[in-house]
Length: 295
Length: 277
Image (cartoon, rainbow over all chains, first blue to last red; front, side, top):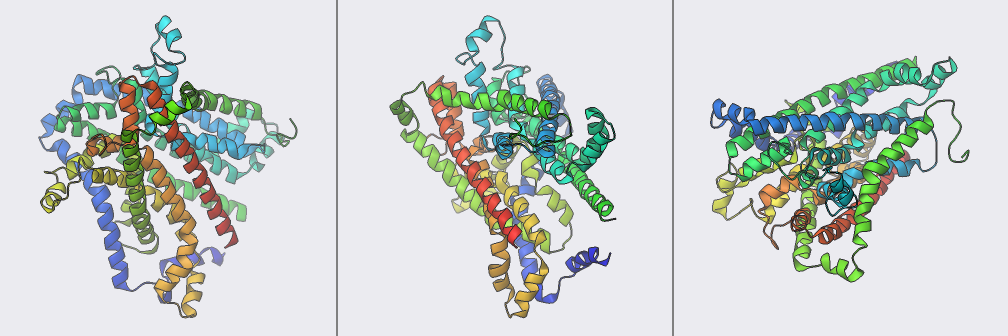
C-alpha cells in the first residue's frame, strides 16, 4: 500500500512551514553536541587516555596482576549466576503477566520494578540486616559457619536484587503486544506447554530476551553501591572489578585504576553496540510481523 | 479462584505465577520489609532523632538539592538532545544516539573516577575553572556534575518516542493559521510532550537521590558540606550503628516509594493524553 510509504517520505523532507531556519537548526545541534561532549564524550575519552598514559606495559601489568585477575573472575562468576536467575524469573513473570488475565496484575508489575527505585546502598543494607552478624539469620549462620555477608554469596544476592527488573520489563510489553492467539492455536493443535513455549513463544521474543539479557549483564558486572555494602572489600577474595577500581584509586594508583576502569568502559561500549544491533532487529521483527498481519 | 483469574486454555499459569511470587518475596519483598521491621526496634522519638540530626539534615539538603538541580538541567538539555535527534539530520547522528545511553551502561565507579579526574584542579576541565575561582571536584558542585551525568539518558529516552509520534499535520495547520515556529512549539508541541518531560525529570530525580558510586569520588565527602545521604548510611553501618543506618534507609525507601507512585501517575497521564490526541 502507498499509505505505508507516505509517512517515511514526509519525515525525510518536512514542509518548509514546519521547519526551523537553518541558523536555528545549527545552533540547537551545536548546543546539544556541546552538552553531550562535555558530559559524555570527554569523560569516556579520559578513561582510555588515563589508562594508557603511562604506556602499554603499565596498562597490561595492572590488568594481569593477580588481584585484578581475581576481580575479573569474581565479576564473571557473579554475572554468570545473577543473569540466568533473572532470565528464568523474567520469562516466568512475563508468561504469567502477558498471557493471562488476573487480579492485582498492575501491582505485581510495580513490585517487579521496585528494585530500580531503591538506592543501591539500601539494596545492600537490607541483606546485611538479614544475613549480617546482627541480622535475623546472623546467629544461626555463625553457628553453622556459613558466611553470606563479606562473602561471594552476599555479592551474588545484592547483584540479583538490583538486576531483577531488567529482563522481565523488556519481555512483559513485548509479549503483551503479541497476544495469545498463536499459543492458543498451538495448544489447540495438541502441543504441550514446553512445545508451545519453545516453538511459538521463544522465536517471537528472542530479540527482546537478548536485549534484556545484555542490559542485565552490564548492570550485574558494573554494580558498585549494593556490592560495596556487602562485600567487605577483601582483596583477591570478595573484590569485584568496580570495587577493585575503587581500591586502586583510593591508593592513588591512578594508572592502574583507570586501566581496570577501561575494561569496564569497554564492556559498556560493547553493551551499547550490541544493544543498537538488537534494537534494529526488534524494529525489523515488528515490521515483518505487521506485514504478515496486514496480508 | 475463578474471579481471581479469567479462564484460559494456555498452560503454566500456576507454575509461572507461583515462581514469580516466590522469587520476588525471597529476593525483594522480605529483605525490603526487614528494613521496616528493624526500625520498629526504635521508639518513635529515637527514630525521629536519628533521622533529623544536623549532619543528616545537611545530607538531605545536599542530596535533594543537587538531585533537583541535576534533573532540571537534564530536563532542559535532554529535551534539546531529543529534539535534535528526532528532527534534524547531521553527521554522526546514529553514533550519538547510541552513546546517549552510556550512563546506563558505564559502571558508576568508572564514571565517578573519570569525572573527578576531569574536574580536579589539574584536570582537563578543572584547570580552566580553578583560575576563575570555581571549584567543582570535592565540593557540592561536583555532586551536581555526577548526578547530571547519571541522569542524562532519562529525559532523552522518555521524550524521544513522543516527539517521533507527533503528526506533522498539526504543525502544518498551526502554520497555516499564522503561527510562527516558536508559537507552534510552545502551544502545540510542548503541551504534547510535557507529560513525558515530567516523567523523565522524575525518573532522573529518583535515580539521582539514591546514587552512590559516581558521587563519592567527586564529592570529597565532608560532613555537613559534601556528604550525601547514601554515604551517611554506609558511614553509620561501618560504625556498627545499625539502627541509625536502618532509620535513614527507611526514610530513603519511603521517599523512593512516593516518587515511584508519582512516576506511575505521570505515565498514566501521558498515556491518557496520547490516547485523547
